[in-house]
Length: 204
Ligand SMILES: [Cu+2]
Image (tube, rainbow, N blue to C red; front, side, top):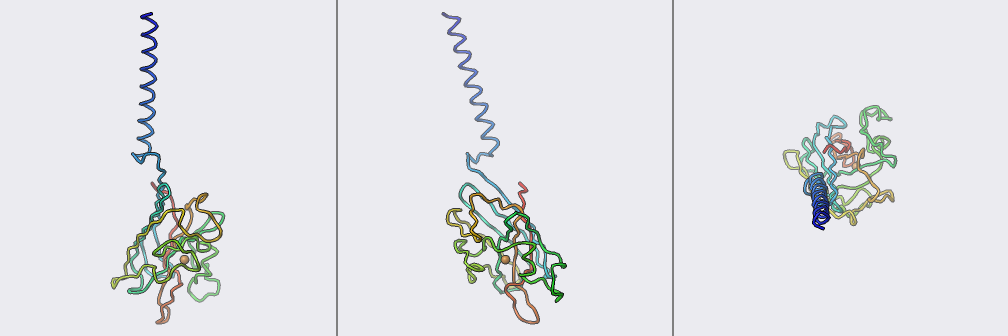
């Protein structure tokens, strides 16, 4: 009787040890995030149309929260810059090269860039909850007098407005392109002209 009791206690202890071990590993793998899935996408923004614009974008999906931040510099000062996550249905968005300038006017228009980066998927405006047209124009970031801006917005993925009848649930943002718009052309501000582009990848 004593022996069988000891064996039972022994197996019980092993069970507890295993449970603690597995739990410990799980907690470790998720960096303490506790069952909430976290995906971080980043993009380096490079200049389009010799704009001299550069920057970074980060999109974090944490559970049902989406957080977007964009820093850009070299943009036209004191102008509103439309910016979007563009995408193709097959997930193959890229940033256009000058060969996309099909009418040879020396500029890649927003339409000429579309075969590379696709249509507007998520307008990165102030609210993220209205995907009509380009987005809510007045709420896009305004560059300061130094030509730089910082943009931060977050929303529940349930309220996020997306175009193309696509659902956010089965979405991976990888290989979608962040495009920043707005440049001076012959002394006039053209709000749609693409000035920077970068494709999102999961780097972390
Ligand atoms: Cu756009």
